[in-house]
Image (cartoon, rainbow, N blue to C red; front, side):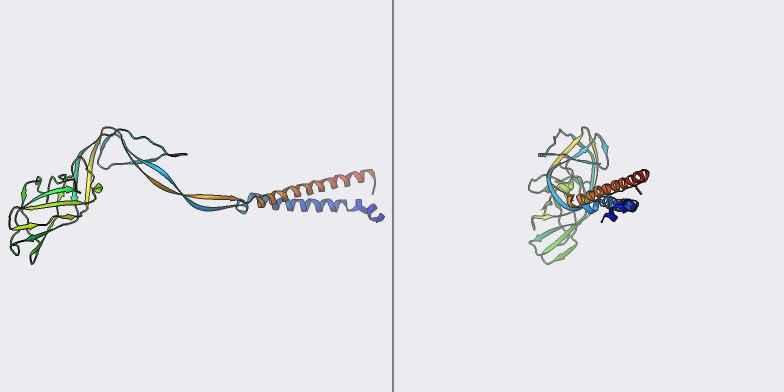
Length: 270
């Protein structure tokens, strides 16, 4: 045992190199763990739903196609936002029906020859608001008489298929806001009974608007956001930092043994 202690200074260079190598290895491993965030931070996904106000802003000017901007304003307590006065004047509107409208007619005389003249009025839902300013592209004013022919005859029933153009009223210019279009067909001839019916049709509309003041329309609802969740695994992070600290201490020990070895040589201990 005594001989081992006396010969210990001979092993100091090897011990210092060993401590330095082990220290560098441990510190490097710890730094790799700390640097690799994915090893101690995991990500997931979830969905949250919050209330919102949607604002559509239209600046003053003339528009053929309305360009809208949406602003979603949400504060910590939920909903925020203000509504300002708007003035919108439709300058020109032109909507063309793209679907054919079916009208079912019943006759008391057992059938039809040429269809009698009809008076056509347009309604929106149950509000009895006149809708049409033109029909069949002929510029017919609601309340006047037009003449059509039936496309087919089946017993006592005949179907009138019409396709035309119309302009909606200024008070409600957007066709897509109508739930349906309802027509009342009133025959001139007393021999024909016409059923009241509801017809659904789609239309392609081109609008030109003059907006005198910024138009701000508001709607409310719920909006879902997909968010990323983050979980920090502190045990992995701590283990990486521990490796770095231990490695640094081992390297310091290696440096200390090198200094001690040099000191002993200078003193002539071996």
